[in-house]
Image (cartoon, rainbow, N blue to C red; front, side, top):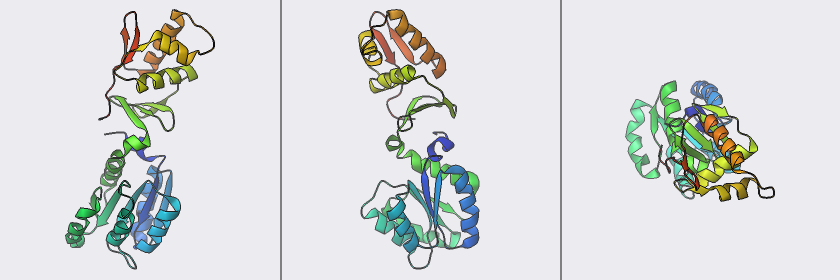
Length: 232
């Protein structure tokens, strides 16, 4: 699974629960995982926050006053089937989950919620939309975030120079296809000609930073990124 922190740390979550104690406890956890946390006490308040703040994911209790979790999801699903939504329920309320089956929820959690299960459920729900997030798998525990232009290896950001960044993006955009040396030169040095050794040097530097040999040399032609197309 994609590193949980990488998926959640820059995202916005909307959490809805009418119980003050539960709300306080879970908000503390969510604040460690997400960049922004919005909270609501009932479905009406949550829907208003959804409209105003456009969260990346919603975590909501199923039983609440004014507007319950199911009614909230029905409203959202009228126009938005992509937003990940997770329901929370008690053992006594699990029969209500049958009504949620057709609302395209991404899972449910039984209260009291375990931290590990909560984090796993949130990350799995976000993983469904990781293409939109811009996270591109390159190899095991190696990802490039197209949205933030960051390379992650084992959950750590790998610093890239501007030319290394341009080269990696060029290879990603042409993955499983050989990029010629002429194409690399034209993309990276459009105004100044460069010798072949200059291209080799930047390839070597990028290979070293990737930590995994996924840049394949095609003799006499150029280079190819030997990376998976989409699945993780």
